[in-house]
Length: 442
Image 1: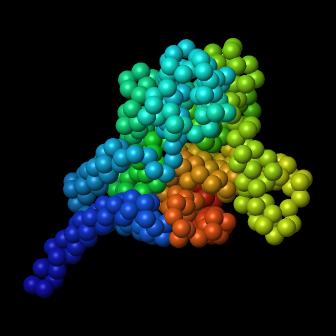
Image 2: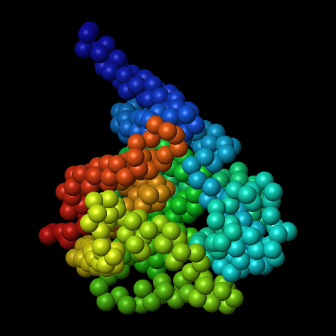
Image 3: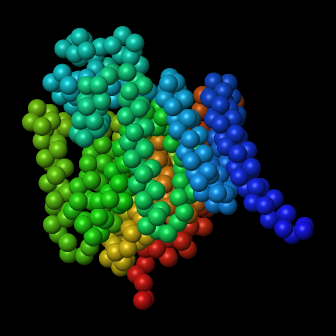
């Protein structure tokens, strides 16, 4: 009798534990919001705890009845996104530039030639939003043409922050559908979606702050899920190029589509990109690159101060002027060699394409060491899809890059801790990558 009664008891444990984890996830979201206003240590602690709770929810969902576990996770994920959708952005003000650019394009002006403070655009200013636009006095837009088209399309519906953030959440929803399809094709249970859906990074960066990285996720993973991938590389490349012209991170998936001597594919990508830029280039000329060169200087990418290894050398008094160019050249060469090697020797399976893309994404982010946490979102789905730890550490530890209150430790220390843990996690992932990106002996 004890054995018979123990089975249903154990069967109830996982669903009950899952309910408890979901409650804790909601409390951590609230705690992160409180921490943003009052204590960075609370902010970090709640974000880290929620990241691990998302993994716990996935593990428990795998042991719970499928008919209730995943729907419960999705319901909470949707509820949290709706709640954050109606909050004021507190981690970034980029969404105000999105709305401004959309209004400028819709009015027939070129955002690559007009700064927001241009008197010719004075009639477009919304008093409630204009003062919140970053660099409004001197910076033209930095965003590529597809992003500008997206912003213009959304602002034709409404210029409100909620609508712009809502559009990004819808794009993220498309990306989640793509992840679900990819999980099925990989033979992994869809319960792993919890590791993404309940994680605080996409919640805060997309629903809370409306970052356009949602378009990258939709394009990149949608292309792999429905674009045909290696079987129909041109369709997939078109989708990824659209994503890269919203934010360049989506281009990290293009090497997965390439095969040796397939010359027309990169030419088609370049031609399509040029076509998208053409309407703006007619008036802006070479200025169509926008604020990007000045942005690289502001962020210290041209001097090395914005890259962690060189920043550490600078703090030790060992930096030299030539090091930034040397580092950039070596990093570019390493990424190119990695892209060519994984596609030259790799197979054409979906797992290999995802593994190669994940490897490129994590390597790129480790070399760039960005100081903006939303840059890490491109890697977020790879924990659920492939079971990798380094993407999880990137998006979870990325909260350390924020600092709002007096109790925040020194930024260089937080930045160094983040990248140290990422490198340790990447070392742990090496075996997994070898299993998916190397050519099979079969």
